[in-house]
Every structure is written in C-alpha cells, then in structure tokens.
Amino acid sequence: MAGCFVTEGKIARNNHIRLIRDGIVIYPTKENVHGEIATLKRFKDDVKEVKSGMECGIIIKNFNDVKVGDVVEVYEINEIRQKLDN
Image (cartoon, rainbow, N blue to C red; front, side):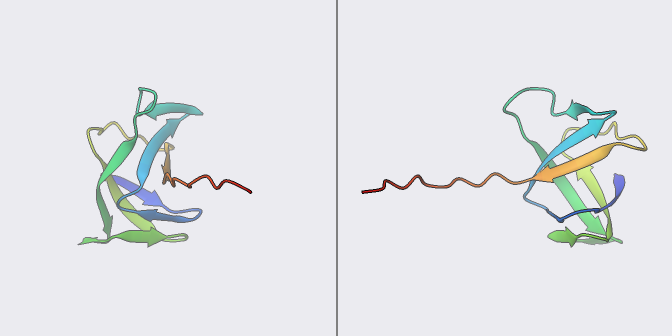
C-alpha cells in the first residue's frame, strides 16, 4: 500500500491511475492501457473518494513497486458526443 497525500483535485476509486518516477511513467508500461485502483483507504476505512489536502492509502492493481518520491497521477476519461452544426 502506498501512503499518499492528495495535492490537487480528488481521487475516486473508479479513476484510472498512472505512476511516475523521476519524470518517467513506470506503470502502466504499455500504451493505451490504464492502471486501476484496487483499494482506496482513509485511515482504516474503505472510501469512494479522497479530496485535496487529505491523506490516503492506495493499492494499485497488479503493481507493488511504489517507492518514496513517486507521483501517483489519477485521471478519468470522459467521452463527449460530437455535435453537428446546421
């Protein structure tokens, strides 16, 4: 489990995740693959989201090589329908 501090935005359990070490994306290693959050905890409780300025614990699905100084970037993908102008 990685102990984290949310510096900006919020983390939701269903968001995608990317781990960055020394400016290089370490996980996921393949293109068009999105990392997933296996567990998101606040103290000892499972939570759905953690907001900016709070600490949390994250377990990344299929990855356990988190080191001090790594940056965990959490993001979501929104599909927006294209509108045709008349």
